[in-house]
Length: 92
Picture 1 (cartoon, rainbow, N blue to C red):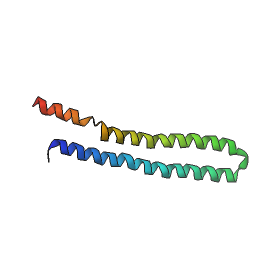
Picture 2 (picture 1 turned 90 degrees about the vertical axis):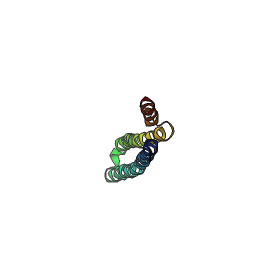
Picture 3 (picture 1 turned 135 degrees about the vertical axis):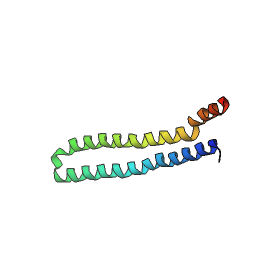
Picture 4 (picture 1 turned 45 degrees about the horizontal axis):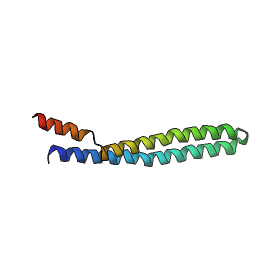
């Protein structure tokens, strides 16, 4: 196996890890929603505050999944390690 094949294989493994981040994000968002629903059911008078906090928390949790998707897209379509490896080969 040459160096370019190793870079592509390792990049694909990193893509799988980055996309699995989205699965973890879904479970985190479900936990946030469950906690908010339980809190509202215990104290209905604070529903507005809990709902606002829940939406902010969901937005922050969603950015984690978006960052994972962004890393995966960059590694698949614009891999920054391949030009570095080609420059290394040209220099030797």
